[in-house]
Structure formats: structure tokens, C-alpha cells
Amino acid sequence: MKNEINITIDDKDDFYNKFDNTKISDDLGSYIHSQSLGMPLKNNFAINIKTSFELSPKEINDITDMIRQYFGLQVQETLIYNKFDNLKRIFLSILGIILIFISHFVQIKNEFLISEVFLIVGWGAIWEVFDNVLLSNNKQKYNLKLLKKLVKSKISFM
Image 1: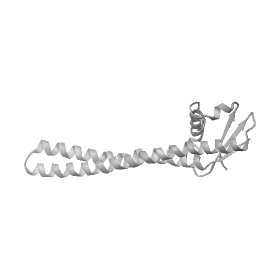
Image 2: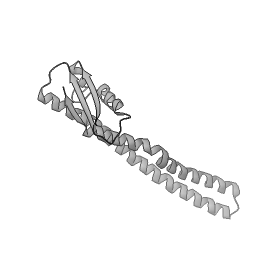
Image 3: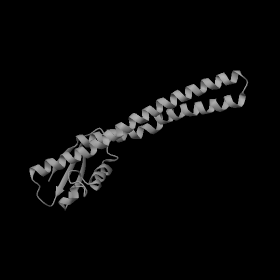
Image 4: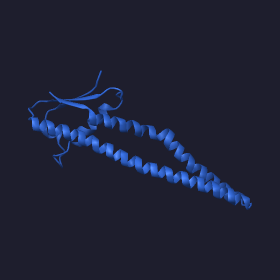
């Protein structure tokens, strides 16, 4: 069984972005994305577009390419965000470890309050990394898989 997204377009202008007619409209892209939410990712997606007007083969190919490009750009944006998020995690991990070591050396000199502050901030930084990896990152991974499925989806016109 396929995950199907059915779209009815009554006006040809609904396909195109009002500022750049080489891109699909944000409304159409958002609609396709919102309709795909909650669909199981096991099966392939199919986007069925029904129009009340005729489209030439060139227009069908252009619209198909624009839909794939729309979601492909979102995949790229998500990958770039993940890259910078990974750099943030690495920085926070290193900062946490350094602060814990500083806490240990300050404790040797009997500066109890300062060592405790460094220790708490260091563990806080490390906890932020674990929280991000274990809890927050799952939604981003799901969204990335969903966007990749939308890029590969079968697009048919009726």
C-alpha cells in the first residue's frame, strides 16, 4: 500500500511561486509536506495531482522537477543545520570536559565554591549534548527521512 497525497488544482497559477515562476508556490509545498506528516515511512509516497485544465508534457516535467527541487532544498537545509549542530555538540563536549578538569584542579587549592561552579557548568554542558542527541535529535531525523521520501515520491498528473 502506498502513501498517497491527492491534490486538486483549479488554477495553473497555484503551481507557481508568485515571485519566481521557476519554483512551486510555498502554499503547495507546505500542503504536500503537511499531508505527508504521520504517514509511515516504510512505504513509498505518491503525489497525485488532478487539474481542471490541460498541461503540456513540458509543463508536467517542469512541475515535477520543481516539486523535487523544493523538497531537495529542504533536505540540503536540514543537512547544513545538522552539520552546525554537530559542531555545537563537539564544542560543548570539549568545554564541559575542560571545565570539569578545571574544577578538579581548583578543588586541590581548596577553592570549594569556584570548583563547584566549574563542575556544575561542565556537567551542564555535557548534559546539553546528551539531551540533544538522545531526545531532541529524533524529530530532525524523522523530518529528514520524510523530506527524502518526498523527493523520491512518484508524481502523477490526472
